[in-house]
Image 1 (cartoon, rainbow, N blue to C red):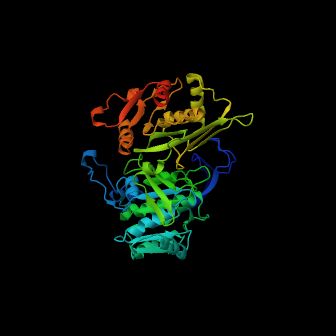
Image 2 (cartoon, rainbow, N blue to C red):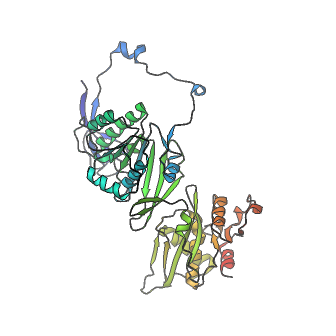
Length: 457
């Protein structure tokens, strides 16, 4: 019979200790030790352990291993298929995390409602069957008789339902509510989440049935539970966005079967989530003629280019201390760009309030929008509008130089597709571009002063 013992494990670094400690001696974090039950398996007989019967597999030469393409399930959702790398791989374990109320359950429910040709088991540990029915009524769908709903939190009962239903796809909503009877701890604890996920992974790999887990996140924004949870699963997707805005972004943080640079964009509506195939048209307002403080930037999130509207407002400080505020952009980077404007270009903004906003509620980390940020700030400061039909892309260095950016061809083609006539790009990016194939006028700039002369004369 297996022996049991209790150890304390640090949730941050994994350090084990026989007794509880307030501070981890390995990583120095406070209050990270949690109690875990460790089972010690009985030793295997020597004649079996060293015999041929105990050998389950043998090493193979790399050249002998077949490398066939993975079989994928079409989710009938272009955005989700793109982020997954072309579809859901058979026998894979996928984890989707996000803030409460962001739309994780809605995304999965409306996806499985479309899969009428697949038998799907949806296990909910948070909502009742009636709540799921009310949500499904709001979502327009053809009607799926192959969708089975089970409201269960016991892992053993879930496997019983799986055995009886024999589904093609299993949904667990959410993994933090599931518990196994083999471990004496509450649902959502470190050991429960880890053991339940490991059991579901074993089931997925042995049967070839894909499993999708919905996970909570903690106050820091990372997925709740042990860090090993993200190591166990094959794919980790992050569903993010601001609840006060309509847009939601699905990012791939980890993907063993595809690229982690893909991005899916959705629009939250009363009847569910709508795929946004061309986000540039929705993120740009076409009626900003005559308004100062607006610049259009060619940004790239992952491998997906789109144009965004950068808005700035510069006004005289009403109080002694000038305010600095940025929405959707790093405030520290904005302060750095303001210092570059003052030191290298000569604009005095120290006694003025500066407010910056990325339209649409997006959070952009692409350094290529630096040029649009300082152009919008200067436009508002001078109260001079930027000519319509002009967009820009470029990173600004501390010396006031315009540094080259990546994927410049994709940014140019996106601007050309949306009807822009001129585009400011870094001078170093001009080499290697076939200008004969491009209809948009490219304006190479090397310094911030050159860009301002092109924009404001």
